[in-house]
Length: 333
Ligand code: DP6
View 1 (cartoon, rainbow, N blue to C red):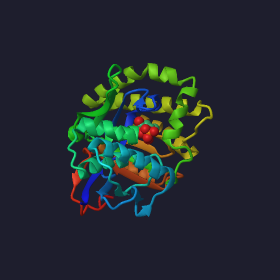
View 2: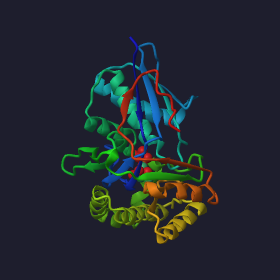
View 3: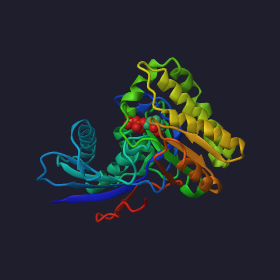
């Protein structure tokens, strides 16, 4: 019997970043994190289980995937099979409407959509918390793409329970994430490998020690819609994570000169009174978080900014959700 389901999920951008693991085997992050999903950027994933398949197959944007990326997904499917207590293999087809592997976290939306479609295809009806817990094993940030809107991924230090929950819906605050793309190439050191080096930086301990304070400020800034407070804590947190990356052994430089130039430009635009702030993940692309009234002027400035090859933008997005197997396509460019 063929069992099939399809789901969509959005990537997310973290204001307070996850960087480092406290327990690698259980995928427990070194610190809690806060993010918002990005509407308009979408991963669409279909999963089909069939007793005739000899192993799991994966295609991404129409291309058959092999090697390490396939192994990572096969291990994740093993986890789903274990939950459903079945031995049957799957055929997975996934499409992104945004560049893969360049600072827009495709692994987040990818594993969130896969967790939902994979479990639904086998008839499992998991809660948001259970799905977020499962998605975390594919990619930590995927745990945050399961619930909608503004999300906090928390680990209970006593029980080890670790999943993300929404603390404000997508329509709570009409922020926009405007992403300046400097490169669409795969980064040389992915976040999974990069963050294993976090503890080699003498700055990581200080970053972790201060995390609860930053989380509190960020959560309140979002709940109170206080852009100035959000801006200050978002930049600090991004800069602290990149300081850890740059002081790891070996050091990791995810920025490009253009990324730094744009961060400096943002500081000037702020002094003109524009409500905009920046944050960067493990890649050269710069996420400019802004209020909608400055979006047009920002897009105009970024489009002509040296080194920028594309600009994407999205407002706060909803949760991962099931869609019909025929698919919605990826029409939301
Ligand atoms: C810099 O979730 O991609 O984007 O759990 O190893 O798959 P793995 O890492 P991943 O790391 C994301 C790191 C980040 C910061 C963040 O999104 O919190």
